Image (cartoon, rainbow, N blue to C red; front, side):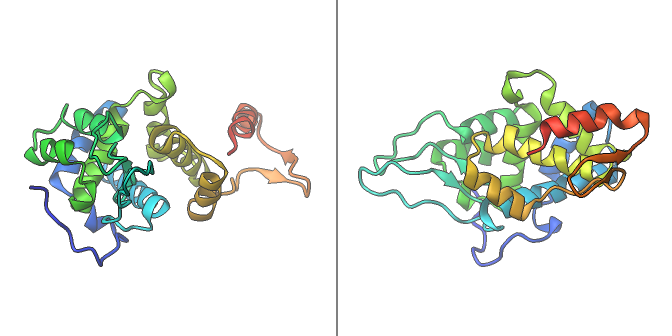
Amino acid sequence: MPQIIDPVVPVTNVSQIQSPEVDALFDKYLKRLGHDTPEAREQLYKMALNYGKIESDGRSWIYNEPQEGVEQSTATGLYQILTGKGKITGEQKTSSLHGAVNRAKRTLDSPWLDEVYESGDVQDLTPAQQTVLLFGDLFEKTLLDKKGYGDSLFKKILNPNNTDSERRSAERQLYLDGHHTNPDVKTMENLNNKLPNIPDKRLNFDAFGTVLKQPDSELSYVNTRRASLL
């Protein structure tokens, strides 16, 4: 059975979500992305911490208790993964959980993946196991039906030559297009509170937000950035 975690310790540190299984995913996919360095791995673990903070305030054990005849969110665990168990009848549907398990199994052959696929009890997994589901899904998923789009976001997050602003923007976009996928006003407010944009120190704005001066090489960057601001 999946390992049951102590439900009184929120996830606040990278050490709580690190594991050989997550590292095995990094071994495979960071080579593909061209950024297999200790710094890149640390960056992804910190991103996972941020996503857990956004989704559950680091509470890996939370879930919505089913009620008779009531349809409600099935978001569960640290990253609030949808399990598809929306009614007390226990009806199992194709869900985000099932997709995440199938994608993770392209790299890992861990018995607990089959067990949670059947049970849907994500909240009973360790934070590290839930992080396997997060990255197993994100690394393999085609985002917005655009082949290569997910990889392009990961590369922006991992590229050491990018500014903190560029990395944060890509991290936010990956969350919206790869993990949450159906944001509303409340989602954006939560994202802006817990994972705000970082101002780009390379740009010089006046009081009205107009760029006053910048190198010609950054013109296309600024135009792209303005078009994709969240």
